[in-house]
Length: 332
Image (tube, rainbow, N blue to C red; front, side):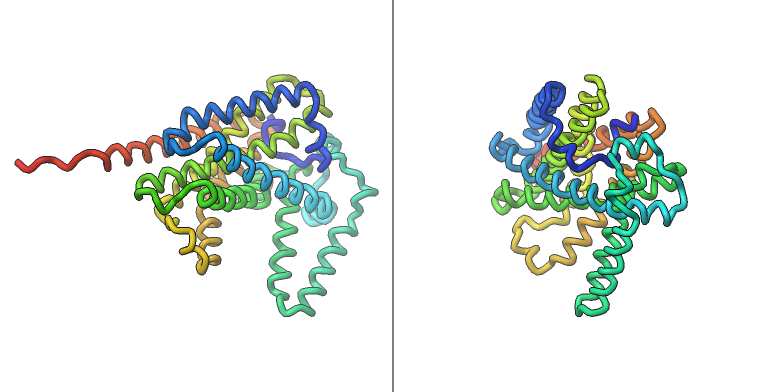
């Protein structure tokens, strides 16, 4: 089941998907994306044209590729430091999948980087910000790095929730906010229409993120010789799951976001914390899913529950539309 989760791979895996199984998997993934658009997203907003859908997917995919490369690079940089900090051994099979070369990524790299940031923090007026960034880098690095260590269930759950889940869910939520105000004329919508397009925009961003991430794993599957089932699981199930998690975040934010994006210009810090807090529940669900993927078949029903919740959120918002559209009762 680990192949359906998230794990550390070589950064070059993004370039290795272009082969027969990878091309077929991408075709299946695109078919799935447009079916989800037709069956669910268009019900939320008929205004989602193929062009707008592609733009939203592009934003989510680009963010996925950039953030995943950052996660992978920092994980490799800080891997030896994480090993020393935890005192646990490296799983040789998972390390082999990641292409870990001890000579290429010596233990001193992370230490040098940390000391360099500490020195910069002491000399720079933005020292606190530098310290925060350095801690975040270590946390992010620990996220993927922990997937190659022999950890207990709860240790893995904590690492995957904070180091991968929260990072990715927050990134997808930020992408959802961008897609919302980029492809929709939000100021021209009624209140219930706006709430529905918030769901749609966040769902599109999540699907795009899942699609971009899938390319990396298609490349890794080619090296490991996986069959059609694993490719299909990533192309259909995992991509849909990413969209579901982000749509749920959109549901939590639908009544809080303004229809006029200009109202957010002077509330950047408030917006940051709003996205962060809304991302925590799905980050926990994300972390548990990744942890279950390492050793348990329960990952599939747990992820399926998240998809089910997302579908129920869609139905709840569509029902809200129907109830608001009913004419008021006639006086007796």
